Structures are given as C-alpha cells and as structure tokens.
Image 1 (cartoon, rainbow, N blue to C red):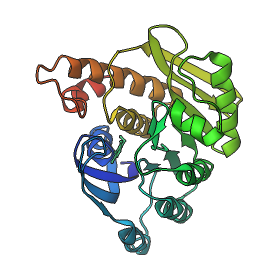
Image 2 (cartoon, rainbow, N blue to C red):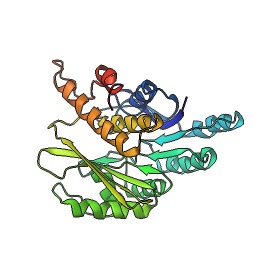
Image 3 (cartoon, rainbow, N blue to C red):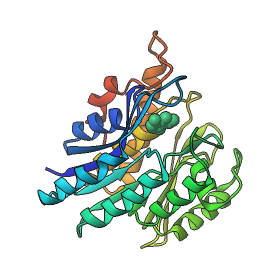
Image 4 (cartoon, helix red, strand yellow):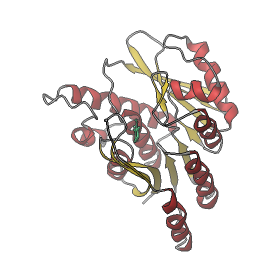
Length: 275
Ligand code: PXL
C-alpha cells in the first residue's frame, strides 16, 4: 500500500485541509499519515476562529519518524501557517525524499485576487521557494500571480496562462499545474506544463457559478490519491477536476444550503468509480 504524508492545518469545523485530505486520500486506498501544522476551531472564513500553532511539534514528530525509518511514497503540503513552517517543510523534504517520493506542493495562500488573512509578501516569497523543491505544484491563478509577480487578471487568453506557466516553471518544479483556468466562456479547468517534455496539458470542464471553501484542497487530495493509484498526472488532474465539479453540483442540491464546505462525503462512492 502506498503511504502518503500530508502536511496542513486541522480546521476542526469547516471541511478543508486535513479534514478533506485524510478521508479522501484514504478512500483512494493509501495509508495517509498526517502532520498537523495548527489546530483552528474553524477555517478562516468564519469569524472569531481560534488558532493553536503546532510548529514546535513538527521537529519532534518527524524526528521520531526518522528514528523509525519511515518512508513515504508521496509528500503533499497544503495550507501552512507561517514562514517558519515553510522552512520546516524544506527540512522534511530533505529528510524524507526517497528516489521515488513524489512531492506535491499546493501553495495555499490566496484566491480571487487576494491573499488570505494573515499572509503577506514574505510568505509568498517563501512559498515560491518551496514550490521550487516540488515535483508538482498546483497553484490557482491568484497564487501564481503573486509568486510570479504577474498581474492578476479575471479575463485573459491562453498566452497569459502560458506566460504564467513558464514563470512558474522558472521557480523550479518539474510539473506546474494552474487551477481555475478559464479559456472558454462557461468553462473552467486547468492548464499544466511538464518541463521534462515541454508539453502543455489543457483540460476544461463546465463552469459552475458557485464557490465553496475547501474545493482546492479536494482537488489536490484527489490528484495525489489518483497518482498514487497509478494514474498518469494528466488523468489524475482530469479526474480531480471532474470530481470537484460533480461535488459542487451535488452540494448545490442540498436543501440545507451548506455555505462553509462541500458535501464530498456524499460523492466519495462516485469518485471511486471515476476513470
Ligand atoms: O482551503 C484552504 C484553507 C485551509 N485551511 C485554512 C483556511 C483555508 C482557506 O481559507 O482558512 C485554515
């Protein structure tokens, strides 16, 4: 069985980061090892959330794993809290990166043209450095604009996305995938670039006019799980995009109208059948 280490916060209520990554990657048949970077009462879109930073636990926990000679097939990082934690990720990559360990960095820090609360340009710079150490990065357009210094645009053409991918590639990851890329009216999806082949990959899906928290984490978790199941990265991306869109549609039908996260629990059985 593949073993995946995922490093992100736990938002106790809110359906994002580890409360998505753990069930989803496990459902895809991987042993999922978690390293929580902080415990929050809810994600940061709620008001008055509490935060307990766990930076001081990262070193002793990983030291114990090192002593136990633990190996990982993949390491996937998501929302981190501080510049110091990004530095800690670099050490973890160095310590646990085996010949075949896939490192996926989702530089979660911004959306819709804006940084999330508590992040600044220093954090952006450090995240760009961390991306440089990954095999695959999956920023959205906002995160990529911040990391590359490009202007954030809501309307753009393929050339804008290609330039952004080329600048992302300069950060140093092997494969860069931009999420939330809309190249046709009524569609959205992704565009990726593989530096080892010079190939682009585009996938466009129906655009759903709804935005929920945690859908980026859902996308990345499915992607990591599917790659671990043996899928090519392009197929894994397509499945992750289709599944995320399907889950948003199912959530929109929920008469309780959940606002803070999607009903991925209802769609996991569908995920397991997707090809
Ligand atoms: O889904 C990304 C995410 C993860 N963790 C926390 C967040 C967010 C987005 O805002 O607040 C704590």
